[in-house]
Image 1 (cartoon, rainbow, N blue to C red):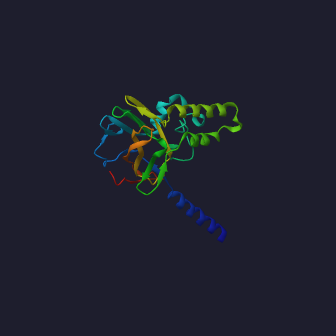
Image 2 (cartoon, rainbow, N blue to C red):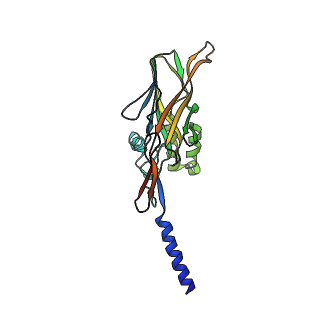
Image 3 (cartoon, rainbow, N blue to C red):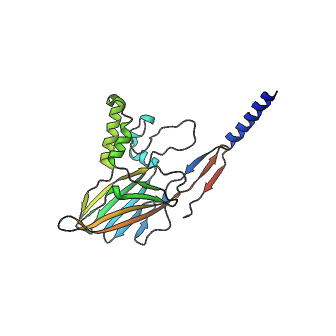
Length: 247
């Protein structure tokens, strides 16, 4: 009898724990209200820094946008070759959305200086809760995806190569942008933790002028503010939002 009573109590207690379970949810990144005077915000969420006729635009990309942009690479579930998302993969047994990376599109227009340069490795995301995320370069992403190329042959290796090629073509390059030129590419970061609601994306040491030895003589830092809603979704459907302080 004691054993039966103990099992019953354990079952009831287990139900209580299961009923209290929850998943985190995070909304898409949106431009923060506090931007520098040199910034402008577009309807699509792009934040633009402008100095004379030099512009640097930053747009947070959702997985939906990335899957639409690379549609043919995002329709094969776990075998999708979109290097920025999980494609249309369905994850069973959880209501949480799976985000592979945090991705921004950077667009540069240079109609003001002989040449400028933005080094993607000098772009960092700083959260209000002190977390920091530095951008991932091609070599780091290549190492990440190499693990999927089992045996380096067959279909898995072909998918690995396809991801590599797409990254090479679409990531922001560490190159000089001459007068009258424009450049665009993606900058990739680790996925933000679910407790991150307010971030600053800092583009450090943007080179505006070089000397005769091609050494930087004028640089600037650019900071962009973004926010998102975060919270918890309980198993019974109850939503407990934690709205960003910046909203």
